[in-house]
Amino acid sequence: CQVLKSKVILDQVWKQHQQESDTSKKSDQVKNEGLLYVLLYELLLGPNHAIRGGGALKRQLLKKEEKLRKLLKKVQSERPETEQDNLATVVNLPRYIRINTLWNRGNGHDETLAKIQKHLQDVAEQRQQKDMYRLFRDVHVPDLLVLTHVDATKSADSLINMAKLQQDSDLKHGIVLQDKSSCFSALCLARGFEHGDTDGPQPSRVYLDACAAPGNKTCHLAALVAQKKQASSIVYALDRSPERCATLQRRMQQFVPAEEQNVQVVAQCLDFLQTPVAPEKSSTKPDKKKQKKEDNSTAADLSKVTDILLDPSCSGSGIFTRIDQHHDNEDDDDEKEDEPDENDTATPSWTKQEKRMHSLSSFQVKALRHAMTAFPHVERIVYSTCSVNEQENEHVVAQALALDASEQDGQWELVAPTCLQDWSSRGRPVRPDDNDKQLELTPAQAACLIRVNDPESETNGFFVACFQKRSVAAISPKTLLTQKNEMLDETGGTAWNQIPLYPGKIALHRSRNSEQKIPACNDKDATTKGTATVPSSSDKIKPALPKKIAKKLEWKRRQRQAKEARQLAQKQAKAAAADKTETLSS
Image (cartoon, rainbow, N blue to C red; front, side, top):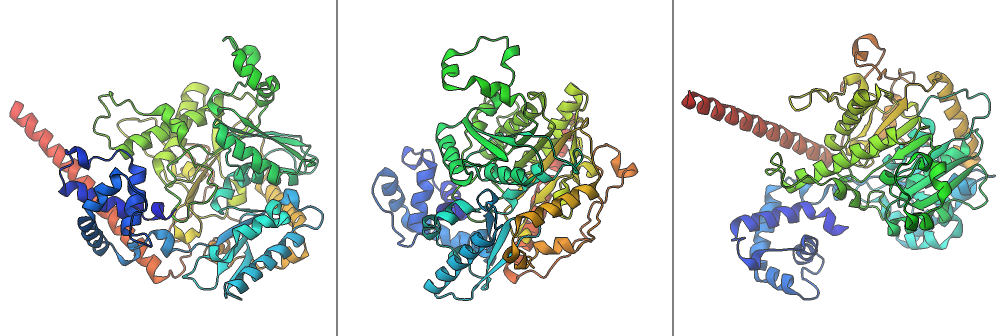
């Protein structure tokens, strides 16, 4: 984790070293980059400033130790003060604790809440930090607690003893340490859509978490579904990796009681892109070996899926703080299926990062289109990533909608999730370009997308897009909001309701007009004829930022402007060179 936090500095040091060295020498070539960064961290930034163990790479680095240390000082002197450490050490986000309502029935949250408070008090006394913590309810995600440290320079993680939490059987099953933004996926799928009549019992639905391991979003979805007034539903959770699927199954056993009546969770080791949703219509011969491993009824059940949560592998560029112990995109094996062809004449100039981004976005579009087309009864899809890159977010959404329009006459539309209607940070429009004039996302469509962009949101970066089939009947937002508030009241207890709402920067989103209209995001010309109200930058309430964070954001703004200026200069230089060549040839 510490190596990843320091990777930006280590990367600059090593790149400058390579520029000043003869990389053609065999002794200067490094095959294992992961080991390289670990050893560089131990040598330059580790607590002992020495490399443990032995090996050829260690001997290679020790020969250049003096030069590497000089480069480190140079890099650190050129970086702004707030960049001396990773952003994670500058911005201490709150720690979020989600109450697992599947294990907290009857007395609401009160018993679990009392144990959490007791645990925090014990840890604070042991670490001589008594009265240093504050506990709040989150304003957007029900059942979510916000833990903060009174000292803004210290992390709330220091208030939690993970070993003790695991020893308490009630807390082990009753709470989940999950970042706020990662709760948005399940929240939007369970409570963000307008469907049916909410007065009477709702029909059962079949949910699918397509890339589920390690399972935080799965158990959150199950908990939200179990609270709804509908017949018993089922949540399928899939992962293609046997190792990750084993973790997924363990966590489902940990967080979902076997006697749960309102929802059933089934975790299976299956590749989402190869999901056999309709075996009776398949023209290919079945694989007998696979049939022995898989339950034949699974395919028939998956063909009845109505709701899909798709959180595929991504770059993780939104995780600018700690790397959580169980991160939902911890392995990017899926992206390898769509690596760009290195022999393709269109891609020889791509950098390694550009190739990876192309690979990821290609896989993400493929997975999203599979969700849209392969399941005959699916009505709603939530697509999410823990990335802040437009190529993985808005561009994937725009490509999926463009393919849907050309191949299926536009069966799907974007929907603004009503459960986050007062979240002011929205998506970014995508304008057609010369390469693909069909690729477009209007401002009204972008207003339906949820973005978590920066430390002001006090949670890691995230992106959510909600898709709904146009044929699905809708109800009024007023009815849905009433339903949401009733469900909130049902889950909490007396002590829970006495906990104050979090008064931080996130809560300021709530101070906007509570009757804000849901953006009209279905029509291409909705910006002129719809009633969408997209929050402008002037509408946002901007609290005074701490000095270090303000300097960090200002530095990022200047870097972005400089990058845009460089790109513009390069384009102008290319255009001038092309004109000169054309003039000479004529």
